Image (cartoon, rainbow, N blue to C red; front, side, top):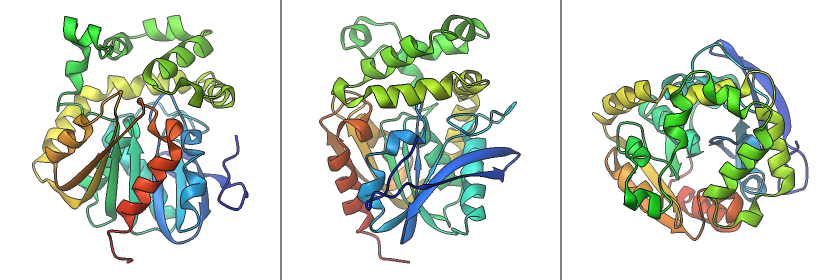
Length: 296
């Protein structure tokens, strides 16, 4: 599915051999590079409304994470350390030594690891609508009256850990499951268009992609260890924490203050799918944040 820049031109679509796999990415615009990392069950298409609001001033790189979208499935490597290394090598291959990183959901967890592991390359981090494994993420699975009454009991985290059963139950019902999942997490459900849902369903119905997505969750215990290790050295780069008022909200900023020194936060009137529900406000927040850093 095409993503367009501010002039209505489709972004370049290509694949790169990096870190033992093949990543699909889209790229367009001009200026200093910004890489946008999606979560699940989404693909790089999640950023379709944000891209044209950035490409006038920035070169935008939009990968599909390992095994997702049109990237090749891999047998292993779905922990966020490996996912972040994929992106580091992709940006190297494109000739971008320094760049800004924007991540949402699992893309945010990956972006955090990228910033922690490559502080000399990542100039700014936008961390959106995510909690880190090992820092409270696991608590969202607790079956309490408060979690259930507030709609914050995230049942699928435990469900996805069970080997083979999620694959059995979801296969053949990708459309029903993904539609329910994404709309359940949204505040403005109309922002999740049929076209977008069709694209996500297409990708997660392709061979290996469902297993890849589940593998990201199943690697989260390793991620917790990696995050605790990384947090021993707080991030020194500027961080913008973006939350959706009707989802993780201000907890996104609280989370980043545990692992970074220079954090500012913003909460937008959205659910979890911030970039799809309020793209103009989201991009405006990014651009204002980016302007606080002098050009390299």
